[in-house]
Image (tube, rainbow, N blue to C red):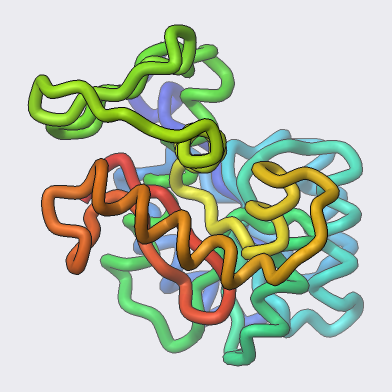
Amino acid sequence: MTATAALPTVLVIDDEPQIRRVLRNALQGIAGLVVEADTGEAGVDQAAARRPDVIVLDLGLPDRDGVQVCRDLRGFTSAPILVLSARHTERDKIDLLDAGADDFVTKPFGTGEFQARVRAQLRRASRRETGEAGRIVARDLVIDLASRTVTRAGEPVHLTPTEWGLLRTFVTHAGKTLTHRQLFAAVWGNAFGDAQQYLRVYVAQLRRKIEADSVRPRFIKTEPSVGYRFELED
């Protein structure tokens, strides 16, 4: 296998040629093959035919709403979907994430941020495919999902059942932005309550236990008014 063949395939769905060119250049060294589509319908067809490792989806498509394209893609592929959009509202972000998108980058965006987000999604997909979920090491933090133990700098970290459920949800979806409602459903099930308030309290507690500096967290990142994202690397 050549070095190029070993690199992932990325599908870019965007109707603007200049944006596709920028993204294609940004993906050099990350993707072995960049497949392009200029409509939602063509993007869904390419995703079905090419089975990309990551899908980059722009919302401003001429033929189909971006939320519906996400739902269509999720009908047959689990590949991470990274959404690009000039829309800025939290409601737009939440709708896309709930429809199956994995992360959201707002235009205009920096090349470095875009590349980092793509790499994060590739790492998450790789961990899922190889089953690397038993023991997770991130800097001085070690999380063993099988034994339900956590250590930081070699010292055991004692978590409540709720804190453990939240941390487990975070690390098994590392690199993915999770909405307040998604996290609330995963940890509290069908309980009723203010998801944002519950999470604010428990995330603060969890940060105090696993972060070196809970005021400047490196692991649990806040997506304002949307939710949280767990990062295994800086």
